[in-house]
Amino acid sequence: MTDHSIKECQKSLDFVLGWFAKPIFIDGDYPESMKNNLSHLLPDFTEAEKKFIKGTADFFALSFGPTLSFQLLDPHMKFRQLESPSLRQLLSWIDLEYNHPQIFIVENGWFVSGTTKRDDAKYMYYLKKFVMETLKAYVLDGVNLCGYFAYSFNDRTAPKFGFYHYAANQFEPKPSMKHYRKMIDSNGFSGPETLGRFCPEEFTLCTECGFFHTRKSLLAFIAFLLFAFIISLSLIFYYSKKGKRSYK
Image 1 (cartoon, helix red, strand yellow):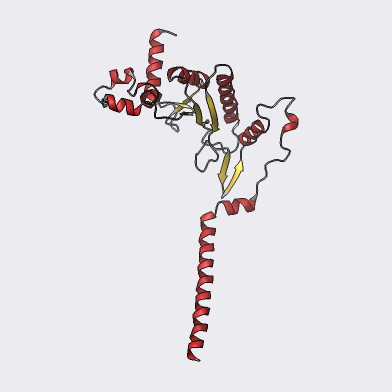
Image 2 (cartoon, one colour; image 1 turned 90 degrees about the horizontal axis):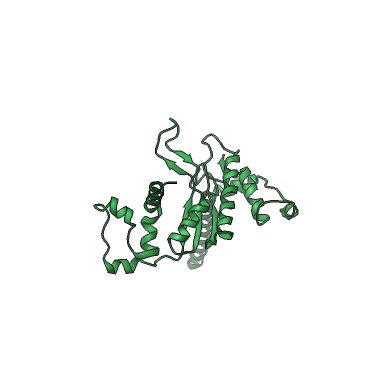
């Protein structure tokens, strides 16, 4: 790797992460690479503002997934997913660049094909790869990593990212969900010593649960109407009875 490549890589990270991280974690000001290239667009901080901004974060929240290329490679895809940079390398860079902050990986996942609904083998491959890189950064590199969150729970809120496929008002677990569950049950990747530690029950699709889960708002509205109807009947009965007494 040449010096020019290193500088360009640093500039890229400055523009993506350093834009916010350097003012908060270092000195209250933008990275020099941004100031040199966007001096007419960036505001100037006063010394008082720099002191006010510096150190205002409790931890570094990182969202990491596919990097996007703005080259049109396919008529059906606006962006291409690239398999770099390494999550381990990025965590080490953040650790060195911003004085060993506490890091939470708040989102980490990978797209599946637009036509893929349930078969997400590539997602499982990247999930395992990301978890391995996170573990190496924590154990081998000494990165102050405090939490990891895989993204995302279901396809309804995050299309193409979810562990659960949503269709016909039901959530169906994908293979990646079972893979991730085994990883959590065994506190790591499965091996001969962890085979007996898996929870024996398998995922089963609960039609009744899916019905109630996907119709919460409707059921709440029906319950409200029923409650209002009962209250109305009670009031009618009470005042009709009170009226009869007054006539006597």
